[in-house]
Every structure is written in C-alpha cells, then in structure tokens.
Amino acid sequence: MTKVMNAIFGIAIAIIVYIVLLLGIQTFYPEPEYEDYCNETTDFVRPIGLMDCEDNLTVGECKTIVKEQEINEKESCWDPYDKARDKYEKNLFLIAMIIGLIVIIIALFVLSMTNISAGLIMASVVLIVYGFARGWRAADDRLKFVFALIDAAVIISFAIMLNKKKK
Image 1 (cartoon, rainbow, N blue to C red):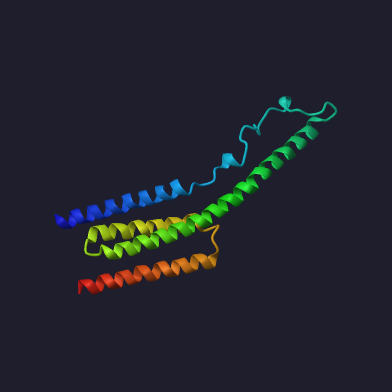
Image 2 (cartoon, rainbow, N blue to C red):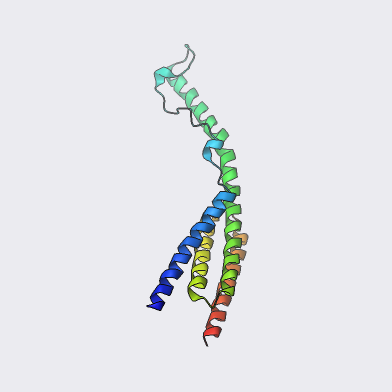
C-alpha cells in the first residue's frame, strides 16, 4: 500500500509542480498577444458593395485595390508580431531549460524522499520537453544541442547517483 501511495504522490507532485512552473513562467513572462500588434476590427471579408472605391473603377480594379490593402494591413502587423513571438519562444526555451535544470538539482537534495524527488524530476522533464517544443523554431540549433546535452548529462548523473545509493 505504501508503494502505491508513494507512486500516486509522485505523480501528483509532478503534475502540480509542472502546472505551478508553467503558470509562473506565464505570469512573469507573458506571451505577446496578436491583438497588441494587429487591429482585428477591420473586416477583411466585406461585401463588394460596401467597399470605398472611386466611382471610375471597375469592380475588378476595386477588388484588386482592396486585396492589396488587406495584404499590406496584414503584413504591417504580422511581421512585428512574428518577430516578438520568435523572441518570446527563444526566451521561453531558455527559461524552461534553466528552471528545469534547477528543479532537477533540487530533486537531488530530497533524494531520500522518493515520491517528492521523482515528482520533481518528472515535472522538470516535462517542462524541458515543453521548452523544446515551444522554442524549436526560434532557438538556435547549437543552443538546443547544448541544453539537450546538459539535460542528458544531469539526468544520467542523477540516475547513476540514485543507483549507487540503492546499492
């Protein structure tokens, strides 16, 4: 019964700690909002009769002008938003990697409490995977490689320490 309870507490700790870490990141480092860069009040699909075109234009010319305006409006807001999102995702990657490693190191200090240690490790691993998923496009491949290498080294070292303690 104790082993089952330890497993349940370990899983619960992993889930709750992951949620707390994720909410903490989102609270103190909010994601850029599309609405901050783009005005969504413009109705891009309006009937041709409601367009403001000069009287001497044909319907085809009017549609072309309106389409160009729509493209310009989208590009003028999308490009800055895209840059801000890329920067956010790269920084989110770094934050998730650092916090994940810190939590793994904290788990080393509570190694004697198996369920807590296991929960912290699982939460940090899920956070690290989340960081890789969100930052995959924005982070540099070398940076991803370095953090993956560090994560692997820390986790393998931790597993070796745990196996030595059991013996």
